[in-house]
Amino acid sequence: MSRAKNQFDSSIKDAEQLLANFDAAKPAGGGPPPPEAEVFKRAGLILAITAWETYVEDRTREALDANLAAIAGGLAAKFMVTRFEDEMK
Image 1: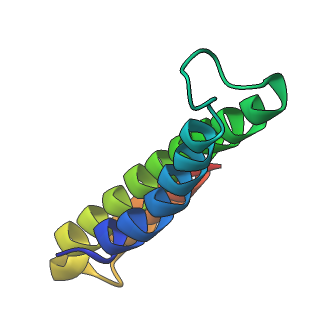
Image 2 (image 1 turned 30 degrees about the horizontal axis):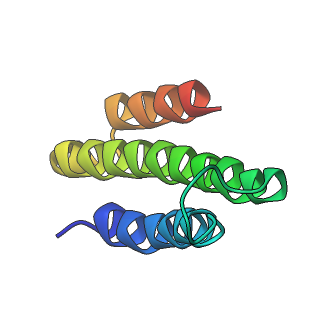
């Protein structure tokens, strides 16, 4: 399993915990949660999106490194790594 996947699994648990806190804030009889509980939902969404973005970037870098291993140190490899890093900014 890739390092990116392991990090994603760890990061997404934080988002899941925040969403569980949001669900726990709902009244026992049903109905919508109190307005102050919305912060859990927003924070959970932000963490989930950030975890996904980081996963995609890290996994892409892992794949790039694996594909360039045969030509590591060469000008083409350096060019591709530089372009990748520029695009990720």
